[in-house]
Length: 289
Image (cartoon, rainbow, N blue to C red; front, side, top):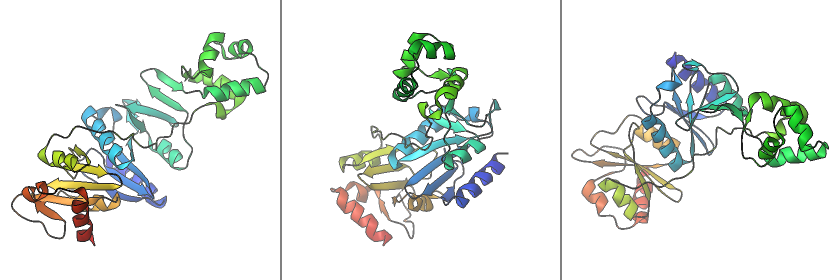
């Protein structure tokens, strides 16, 4: 089932003009890119099986490359419904049909979390529409079946609306008073405290550096628009170089005994000797040329 869904997603995204890279045994199964739009997609038979560690890793890496982390599955214990965005450890989770609608720019309104099914009201839009229609707070409250105070909270954006109440508001004012859920919104950029010698060295050179797990590289470092993926060891991980190319990152291997061919590489001692970021970036770019 997972393999069929993987193939289905890959074929669809290719038809939509995305360049994709499939990965095995990592925290995401597909990296898809179209222009500056990057998706990190984890495909699961059951969305409940994702671990917090995998979800956090997806979010951390996404924040460095301005990508959108997404889990795609057809169920989470029960069947995932069309047009509803779920959440697993703060990662948007949805089924294939909802993913297709989002790619077609038909973003959903409804989300499901610990509070159940809810829709977020665009408070200012609701207030403007209500006033344009000449509907008082009391009248709208009666039509929706809530208190006048609750309508005021909707208009201030203080609380979400249940689906049943939202349908009544929709019948009166249409969809412009509700916020669509942009599942492709970039993960917010975050900084993390480096722990390894390699990550600390990147940090001393002015990079934001992050140690990684369950991906084809060991460290990701970013300085302005320059991104470097670093693999540490004598054997590069599968998918390392193609992935670097796909996300417009430089690739570096820090080897221990055996120097790899056809890729920028150096020993740990050589790497630690760098004093300026621009010297390292120049070396990597010249090697790629």
